Length: 574
Image 1 (cartoon, helix red, strand yellow):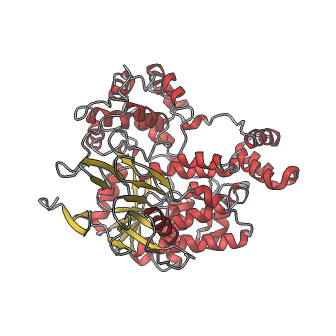
Image 2 (tube, rainbow, N blue to C red; image 1 turned 60 degrees about the vertical axis):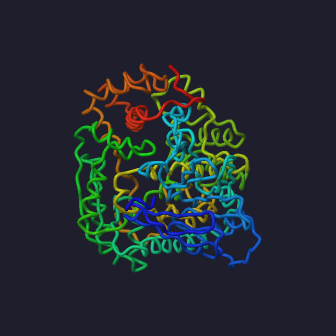
Image 3 (cartoon, one colour; image 1 turned 180 degrees about the vertical axis):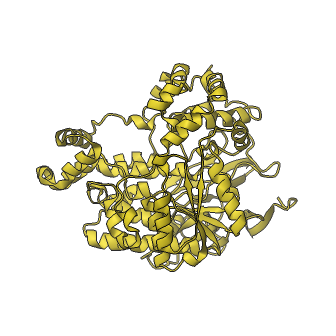
């Protein structure tokens, strides 16, 4: 590490060395003397308990105390008072990746990446694990934080991992702990939500001199822009950027212009036409540690990288995550949650008619589904599966769920709150590798730990039981939003753009997938692929996200299979 100019020694203590990139060094802060370090940016938790002196605390106790008192974008390493064991903890927002592996002879490595390291420091045996690859293709939103190779452990958000041969992990932060303690006073809940979003946005932006704000024209980015303006932090925003995807149904430039004008920001607008996928872009990005849908259409990344270099910005701030946190989705589970509290009187509650209106079903259908969900008889959600996988993979992944959702079920949370938690778990797809992350930090204030904890405590009928989406959030931030965004009842749709992108690429894309590694290994079903990659299907019944995930993973597998062999315990099925 010392022999390269790419890394600098940031901390040294008994048994612990921390090296950070000289290109973009992370902050490193000691914990309780030499008990460990915080790597990344942290901030005081709102209403945190007083700091306690814990001289004989175990690493697990110190980490639990840390998670109650600090939030941010960080990974923590904590050792026992007498040595012998070290634990690594990743903050619940998952903003900073954490991977761990062993080099043998008691030498353990923790890093935010598995690639780009000096020789001898990276994983020794990163063998392709085809069980994990199949899981990832089948349900990418469920496996977004997993690694697809052996010999490496991905530290999960909110979990602590004991380094060493055992690889023991422990859940420190769980959404179910907060969801199981609901807030009764919705007025107080609204005030606190407003305060936490403002504080988190201001704190994250305050760590940089110059940032770029993504303004989609939707509700969530408008809330961030309004909150930064209200807290006086827009002076750090050098410009706002809006991407229009070359289609009327996805063009939100008028809304973005109104958001930027209200916040006093300079807006840069870019328009993307659905030309074609570029195989060379996919192959170049396949060198990353895991596949990512961020690789498939690199125009967005390139636009933002250009603006980063032009303005000298150090970070990008985004409203992504708001759909999940503010619960944009509607479903019968919301009625089931209301039923738990109100019983048969839910028949007179507006939530029943509101959910029926939003899901375009009769109130009796919604009521029947709510009762089925309340007793655990709801059918599996088809949207979780890729439409391209084989029958064997579908059967093998039938019970595959995010760990957070398993915990919610075990704790007996209502179906609506389980839906909320599932959406939060799926957000981690946004934390996948991207080109722009090599240029600047990407910040998601709406997915910050204080906001997550508070939103989880708001009952789902209040969050999502109105006749239009995110009504609670709209009312909380109404005075910070342009009228056109506040009253908007739809959002831009990019499905047609990506379907056209795929259609324009069929000449090379069809043989690339039909004759590819994933089809040969029985992960993808060739009959389903043939149908999905036909122009007619792309027009009428396209699920472009399934195709984009498949092609991204195909490129990744093709790259890595030339460098490492298959796993001995989970080889490909031929």
